[in-house]
Image (tube, rainbow, N blue to C red; front, side, top):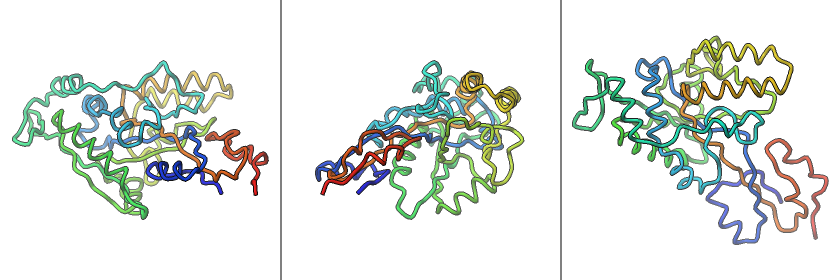
Length: 287
């Protein structure tokens, strides 16, 4: 009678069949994880260039029908720590190319891939997870990312791994350049596991090996606080740093779509990331 999350490609058929469709904000974000232990990716200018060079608004519209919002950091729009004051880095190939040139990547080879005077090429692998249900959306996002990166002189190849192998390679062994990933953020939850420098170990969440003393300090302040308003202010300061430092290439928070048969009454009363079933007592079936 009710489906909590419907794949986007199935929505038109369900609507045509008269099924109730309700969009709601997700409390998760998607991003491209960047391995800071890779010498080139440890350079902030290269990470920023990727962020400026990836046309994320275009992908959000083409692949996900615009059902979501771009994010500047680890907080979804449904979070109290999300802030309109800190906007995502905007799409600009000119800014991306300027960053790479200033960092010394001025040589273009026959494949239009940039390198520096030492011969270090901007060529990376993007590791993507393969689920039993398929890999359609990751493939579409990857194709656009590869095309956009090629436009600014960065080569990206896909490394497609079955999901268990993906988790082992990324979370356990930290054996990747770039990797598609996501995280669910709940209210009152610290982002310390993602970004604290001491949390860089096998199966821990700082698998990108991020290390920023200013971020560590703010995370310590957050942990010591018991004031929700103060915690939100700390998260705002974190957001500003993380947006500019690009520990990840932050992408978007996708809306989810729920569905219910027409006979389910009061279904659309309230559907949110944190209280999807809070009003289930008000739903009933019309025979």
